[in-house]
Image (cartoon, rainbow, N blue to C red; front, top):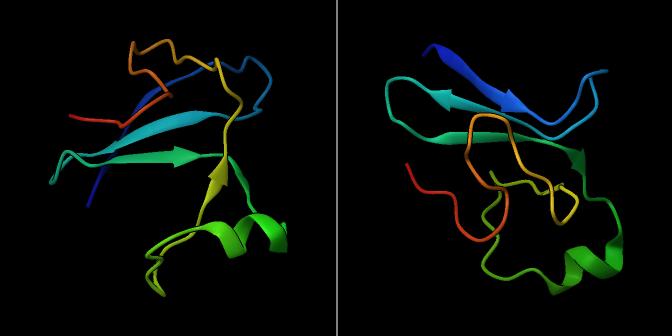
Length: 73
């Protein structure tokens, strides 16, 4: 499946960055992986295939897709 670059707030390669999976319309979010055991212990309904990334509050993406709340396509 092909990815389409949607945008980033970074000029130097820092996160966040968004991509769209062209076949499904799903959004991929690039960010720093959450590794803090205390934070991970508080997450709910986590499937074995899921991971979490950290994105700074207030981050926006030049594509116009907000990084707060749910991401809908």
